[in-house]
Length: 354
Ligand code: AGP
Image (cartoon, rainbow, N blue to C red; front, top):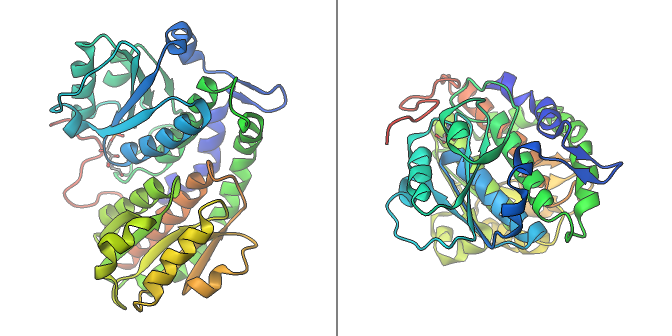
């Protein structure tokens, strides 16, 4: 797992190699060129995936809606199969999967086949069942992922979904060029996050004894918080829940006391002030807070017990850097607890049964 976390800079490079060119202001996705005409007539996208891939899908939902203006909904594979929702011809299905062999996601493809909708794949494992079943798609090129807890594949999935959003929205998004430049700058920023490993390890040692954890975030940081909670659950065997920060006062706040710490994703951006107020709600209930904030933020200390800084980036690309922090945190807590981080109990790398 640690080796795969440290591959993040290279993973971002490989997921954008030959695709993103900020100098020529172009995005090229060879795997979608064959269906470009059909894509022009898409008026709805359904993303189906499981586990970590579904959280990448939720970030993809925000990206495609914001950058391409196409309505998106995300469904987890195990539910999608048994729902009876209408499919219009203008709907496209995007399935996201590291292994390309997940039974619940394959079942989703089989179900959608009946409706004749365009089926696209965001897959890491080359030549896998899902890659062969879909009409077109984009490989993640993260290389084989062996640890059960998905880390580099999540990073690659978010980069690829960002590329798909830019590909679909290239004629309309004012952020197009800025995001192309940011994708090219991300590997160095990911390296800078990895350089924080010792700080993250110290904080992990400080919090390893807690039995419950909350992860909160807003907009792009909400699904990222869900992913952080999943990593702590599956690696460190700690009960952890991800929540939209604005949801706290609608229930989860009742859980908060000095024994229930919170990981708050508080990057610079339009949601920072709102996130501060959610952090204050927690602090006034003696809840401890670990904040992931943007380098240069001088105020966040007033709202947190511990702060991990990441380089400044855009809200749309922040999940990639925040994920590395949460992967390292879960890894170090698990190691401190003497757990088998690569083979967590009760879990398989690819879930090939329903
Ligand atoms: C993530 O760390 C887990 N291994 C699990 O949630 C995984 O993401 C899920 O089973 C989906 O797998 P896939 O991406 O191979 O389809």
